[in-house]
Length: 221
Image 1: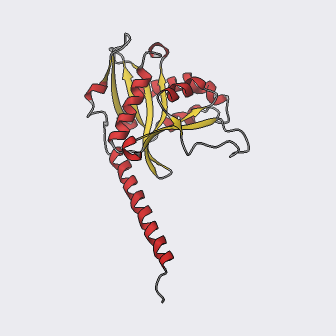
Image 2 (image 1 turned 30 degrees about the vertical axis):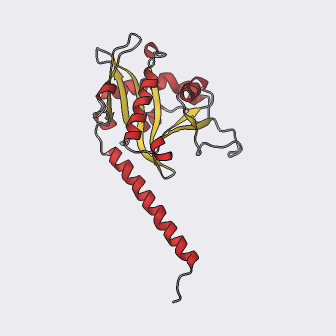
Image 3 (image 1 turned 120 degrees about the vertical axis):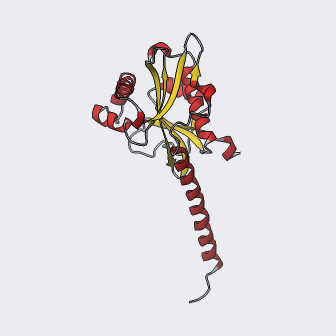
């Protein structure tokens, strides 16, 4: 058998480099997922006391949540988002949504009032997105009485802290185009259109969502 050409060697080297990068990124996600409570190292972020609110925050995998908390999460999601889902091709299905929110990989950041009653949550996951290790924020939902007081911003800052301290590459999320309030909120927090967001003309029908992200400056600088 003849010697490998330089071109073949270059391809082999490139494949090895790509595999090494992927293996490293997989390890980052696995390490993040090994944490039971990623908020445990950030005691200062377990309290929110602004604008008349006095809230405790906790972070748990879905398997450690009580049934009553799971009911709160689902009911608030339905109250806030059902109409938006029905106004696009996603549609709304109670059983499907509850199942998605209860999947083993789901994690929750929850804010509770002094009586221990939950008033806000974020559903997030540690995952690979097109090979990048990310924290994917699936939902951020607040009850009406705690909105416009800085809590949503604070909870997103917590997600960023968790993600970037674990050396994940970015925080990423999906936002519906017909929910301009959510888009304005995330863009005010410096979230930008992600490279993976569907481009105009990519689908036969107009795409009803965008993918936004905030990059980990330690990785991308």
